[in-house]
Length: 231
Length: 283
Image 1 (cartoon, rainbow over the protein chains, first blue to last red):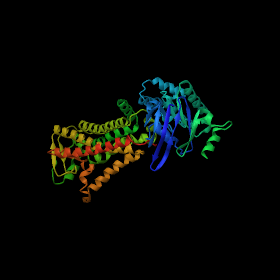
Image 2 (image 1 turned 90 degrees about the vertical axis):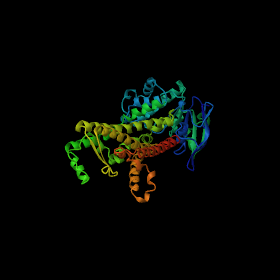
Image 3 (image 1 turned 90 degrees about the horizontal axis):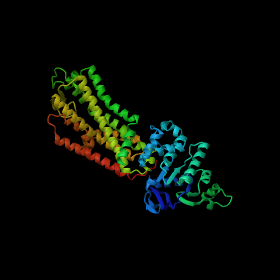
Image 4 (image 1 turned 45 degrees about the vertical axis):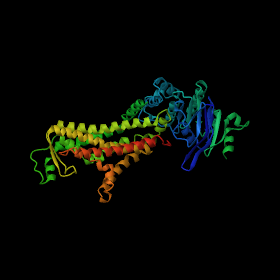
């Protein structure tokens, strides 16, 4: 396994937002994180990216145990993409590249090409539409080809054409570059079409996880399975 | 990594219009004083305030007076703090509110180094505010009104009833020291605003709270009921610059005030680093 969590939990005050989470992500997976609002998806993502400290549990990455994942190997787009609006897309990505120790601007250009923003790279982010910001968010996440990329609602704000392009891009990066993805989404069809593995969360606990083809019975859709599990 | 972070922070800070708003603001007070004094010599006005204590003959207007009038209680207790919190109050909390903080901290960035880069930017900005005020007030004042002796009345500066006449060289030296003292005083506000910016998610709170606190502490300091706590309030020492103009500089008192201000500043800083390196980023 590339990533495993053991009894991962986070308590806010007296309430456990997430508890007993044993997540398994294999190398080359596209894992879908599913769950209703408040299920704990964002809390798990924030713990994996070091934004919040787990109250208990361990995270294992490539068989090494951590309290907090080594962020050298992980990139993320968390919730709404936020950038320095008074800077251009290029300048924003340059900042994030430098923060990761990347001096090669070729990677910035490459990622902007991949999300279709290269022509607008010198425009200030404040002039971008929500969909363009979403693409830029994806560009910053895939820019340095990290081993694990976590995307929170990656197709938010995109039009149908944009959704397809991003979906194809994720597939391409997964198959050609060997990048592993965790994708959190409310869109069951998107998860079913894109992911090979799924985790279903409710009230901070894992209800089901595994390879989609093994979880679903013949003829059953992920939507049917999800509703059966969460109701 | 620290240098990269500092470079990024400075780049971000000097790309924001708000930073220039603050720096221009710092130039506005001395400019206003120069314009007003060019229009009307303040000597008769000052003579009227002093009443029967002194008889002023001739004009006391020169570049040093411009600088002295620029640095006054209103500037140090209110105007400069406003300019400081405008940028410093927003420096961390603004990133949290806008969401860029979660993107930055999800990268392999050491939180303490990140905060250090923000602190260095804040210090530089605070230094520039005082420097601009010194250059425009002292430099501009000397350019327009020339040199001369500086008449300083402790009474006019809210201190005891001393007065001092400084020759040109001494006035220059003392006013440079006053600006140094001003920087020290304003640093305490910078550190307080920095602490709040590291704690709060809303930059408005980190901007407004330090100003309210300074005003509040200064008001309660005037009530005899609070006389016992007064020595522990940093606002009690915000007028240390006045002593730098006295006939005999009370270095012991000034050092004591400086240590107390820096002690508060250090506590604010330790609080910032302690809290920020442990805080959950939930925005």
